[in-house]
Image 1 (cartoon, rainbow, N blue to C red):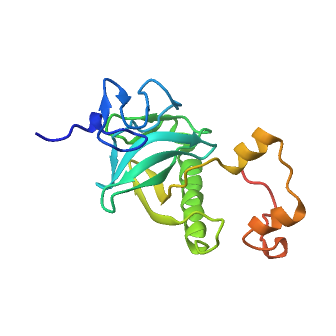
Image 2 (cartoon, helix red, strand yellow; image 1 turned 45 degrees about the vertical axis):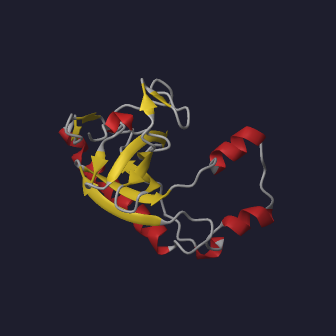
Length: 189
């Protein structure tokens, strides 16, 4: 008798879900964030990445906790899913633009999303930058896979504690000095 995907917890990835509750970590099916057009838990990307619970959503995408079936470890998958373009998720997982007039902007920003993955990949040896493992396109969108780091992010640190960085703390986590940064000459949409 095989394992049903519904028995795999989208948080700890143990085969321990019974009646919508994980007996291993306590995850509950009804808990956690829900975002429009997010991939459902247990969706498999690239025949390799088992999607788990969503970790967060920003303007350009959504990040999921995931399980790498090839290397058998937990990772994070970021999906290009902009909130400034009307999209619909099909049952197949494909994203469909609801307004064909958005095609150019969607593709332009999708390319920028993948450029972000490439930049992160190239600076992966820096100690404060998450390691990018893989990037690919599927479902009329793009993804990149990174190491999963359990904890809170910088935004949560600042919001939770009204934390103010000293100059030395801020420069310690910056991968390059500000004099080496190339800044855009104008703001883009």
